[in-house]
Amino acid sequence: MRRAKEEQLGGATQFYSTPSWAVHRLLDVHPLPPGPFIELGCGVGGIVRAVNSWEAWRDGALVRPYASVTWTGFELDRRIAQAGSNRMADECVDIDVVVGDALTVTATDIQARACLQNPPNDLAEEFVLKGLELAEEVLVFQPQQFYASSGRESFFASHPPDWIYVLPDRPRFAGASGAMQCYAWHCFSRRPTGMTRTRRLGLTDKALRASEFARQMRENAEDFGSSEARAEAPEAAE
Image (cartoon, rainbow, N blue to C red):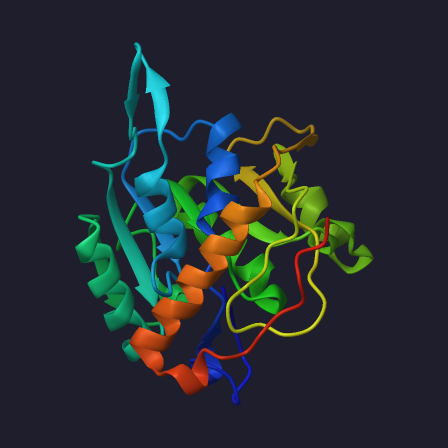
């Protein structure tokens, strides 16, 4: 996720890396199509790395179903893109990271089966529409009020999500401050069913969430300097 807050990490392209457990809870219930996949505003690869690392039982064996998927990621900030490329290479993710504005990409440049993203809140509609140009399915991580807003009535009438998966644990973003919000995955399709269904995702152990947050803070310190990664967020709400 990237936000326009000049005083924080990333400057005008501020990002808050999506916790891996938030992605894993989605994949527990929502199968993705075969690749390739894209992410618009990939940051340091929080979503990509989580999809790559998700494990499931198949025929009596624990496997990583999406570990061989090819990705294309777009990131506006060159410094963040380089840090993300390094992190994803360390985890053997097959991705091409493109430095540039994701909203200027066209369907002639790339086509994918799925687009997963956590865009800036005030640009979420534009990122959904761009995602639908480039991929058959778009899964967007946003606060629940994204769907509740009366100002988006016409948008959702024209582009109803097939599913809204509500995360019961509020995510804590490294580098963020202020109260945590309820989040959900909003799943759009080029061929919508016309009926939006809602499902509550599974809980994630508090210790695992705390460990994930500590890892993100440590990586931010390593990649961008401790002074930019020191912001604390409130304790997780239960």
